Image 1 (cartoon, rainbow, N blue to C red):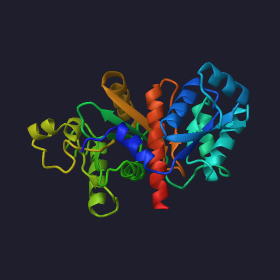
Image 2 (tube, helix red, strand yellow):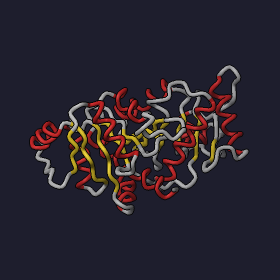
Image 3 (cartoon, rainbow, N blue to C red):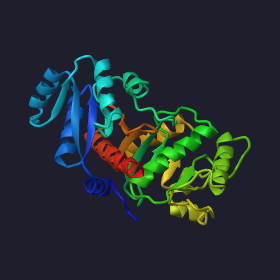
Image 4 (tube, one colour):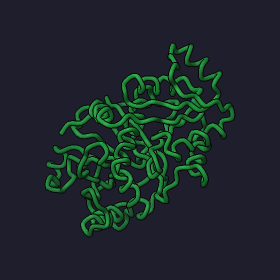
Length: 306
């Protein structure tokens, strides 16, 4: 079944409207994105930050702030703590980074008093809609976990499967990626991939089908899978979740897609009490809106599980 971000936005609108808390909201790109999300019925926002600057930027962008909740806090560290507390306390369903450095944002998430710790491993998932590929691709981890251990990979799969389920993928196909599709003791990631497959078969990893190791071409290209005689493997040609062996491989693929392919994407941090939206200033406007939509879908999914 073909799925895209329009489908996700439609899915959001079927749920109770969510609210995103924005830390240090005095950022033109983020204000544009949350305003678009509000206008499209994706989510409302609570803006935490320097109110005078927020209003100044909004005026320049011709954004009407009538009816918006704004919490004035010029100090960026305090703004992050006040915004994350809104999510911690259930006043917001998502938490988004504004004009704030990533270190401060993550520190607020991990705060013992008001943060979003759950005891789970935190991981990043980038969801891509790529022209020519019928399914959404869930890339993980391309931005947060640097060199995941086997245990980390189990948690990353669990986090990402929950995201896929929320997006409507009932039983995602997980492809632990490697340069080859056979186990080679000299290539540790292939050994990990085979162990993850076995854990899935034994019921230790659930809600998905794990098939690895797989090379990238076999995972996403049915013709390549057929040419290589791998068409009967569970995830061959139709993998939903692409599990990368390390951040180097994942980030290179992520940036290659963004800069060379006709695609859309959205990204969130998972393993937290609510989805965290960790976008970069270099991310496009649409990526920011897509990330809010993705977080809203996942927030609805988390609410349904509770």
